Image: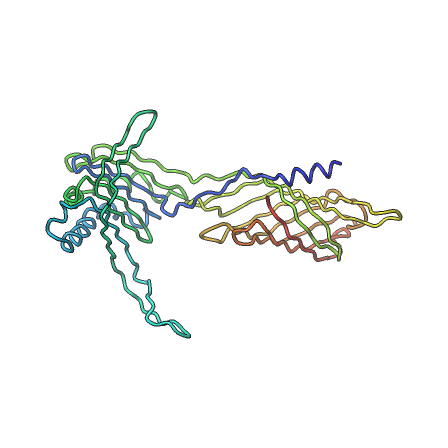
Length: 353
């Protein structure tokens, strides 16, 4: 009966981990410009790799607005609001020249692609915190910039207000972030900053380092294994830690497991179920940059030996590989039994609920 109860618990298995959303741009700075009626949010993959990007941003924005102005009618600014989308194409990207038995490519070189669309349904955006309106953005102009290392979102009440940001000086803000961030000791923490400008000067600022957060997990799984030409069902409760990188991607998992192996052995009358238990530990790594697929090594020791399946002290070593974006894990296993004198190969397929 106790094994039936254990099976029911595993069938209702759960995990306290949850699936984290990968944040490819963990560093961010929000710049509020009340006099220009503009809000800028800059997000970056690694701000420490481009410490002058914020300092140079007004010049970059001025360049973009000049391209837009020159490419549209003279009264363009009065016909808005518009959404301006800018995509920075890296130098290494290629385009297809011909398609056949083999494709022919050529590098396109670094370029800027700008799309201007009329906002057909203007929106008013309201932010409420603790039952108070802390931000009210009436319908206005929007500009987004996307690149491999950063993305930017800008709101302005008019095109003229957006273009006027090009004459500002962000050097003080850039220097303050570099000083307070202490890039040499960031580790996997991300940078979160907010700044308010008045009279072309940094009036207020706040700064924080955010740790991506590691997780404790508890899972219950089931599977089927093969040992010495014998098939057996298996139940595997586990507990452990998952360590995330600065993009909140799971990178390292350390687990403690209790593997219950159920062997059916024929007796004079019917069959007897012998339950053997291995206490195991494993270290796994996630090499998938866009999802979760664990691969690792582990070791276990037989602490409950029933029947004559295993002789004497027994250990097992195993390699685990989770199928990409699946809950199935393939586990080749190597057993040292008979007081560690005899080597036997086994394998199992596990499903984690």
